[in-house]
Amino acid sequence: MSLVTYRPRRSGMPSLFNDDFVRTFFGPEAQWPTAPNSKFVPAVNVEESDEAYRLHFAVPGRKKEDLKVNVEANVLTVSYQEQKDQEQQTGKVHLREFARKSFSRSFQLPETVNAEQIQAAYTDGILTISLPKHPVAAAQARAITIA
Image 1: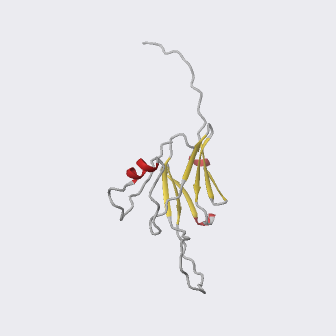
Image 2 (image 1 turned 135 degrees about the vertical axis):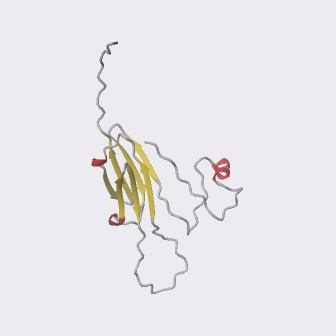
Image 3 (image 1 turned 45 degrees about the horizontal axis):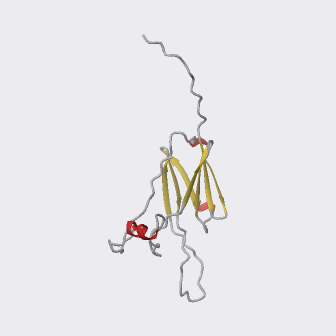
């Protein structure tokens, strides 16, 4: 499965201090901290076994009814649309860091995935998507006659 890492450019950051600069000094996985008003992109782990691929999305605080998983034209899209809370505030809020921002992530599925049997489950803030592979037909050995 070919996956391309998406690293959005953060506005307002000096050009000298880009992600490559940060990784040079702090290691290959280091990134600039995300600003509170930036776009949310959930972390994803991808596993592969002989039978299937499994994607694990870290999306805590969401309801499974609000998460959408679609497959169209061999592209898997996982999205969440932010729902505005209609709660009444009785006190004065001094700091608000909790956010349920909208997101959408798409993955090009390899030819080996059986799109008809994709399954998803949401448990403890982790969305797990199972992408079963087509059974691989054993290659038949045969002699080729030269004409």
